[in-house]
Image 1 (cartoon, rainbow, N blue to C red):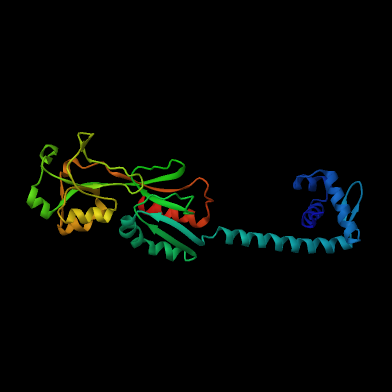
Image 2: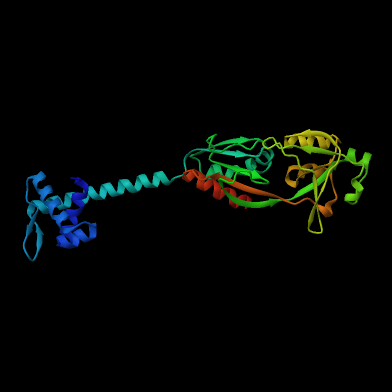
Length: 295
């Protein structure tokens, strides 16, 4: 016999004055309610109810037991409520994977507010340009830039990231400032090769709503965003990169945007997590924070 459930049935019988009504409220049969009350009386060794064809009333022992049951059931309910609230509080370790430069320049400077709001959440950040497998590496969520390769993940789109085509002052002095795609003959570029897929994308320009790809001689190939910018700053060629990445260099004038009227298409920014992930409170509030900051 489930003693707590039997207590609930007994208190419902006393409250309603009816086995039938109590059974209905507890979603059991009247016969089950009657059997449970008999088992309870037998285990206690006392009679709990006076039963007639017209009424059901507690005995003196039954009234005493009724009040004790109310206290016990109230304590159990309150304890379960407290534990449910604790379980719903964001806490514990949360593993997040981020693009290296985006983490350093955009996410980490804004994280203070999140950490102050959720002091019991321990963020474990990994940052790099390699696209990892969230499930295999036990990562709760990731922020990704550009085309999503893994369609098995749940994704939420954030804002788009404008891209710019740029060169260094040194390169500009040597090769001149092209006014259009046709003027790129004789220029050279720095190649960015994905460390995950190995893909290489040529320069891309949006001309009257259509994308035009341009292949230029390559001086150097890199697979890291910071190396990509460093090679450009050294005057080694043209790059196309999200504007946030070189905002400071553009302001300082060490890098210069070229062909601003035919910028490449913006890149998508997304937050991802696995279909198999349990949406624990810490993950839920972090995703909400990301959407609010970068959506």
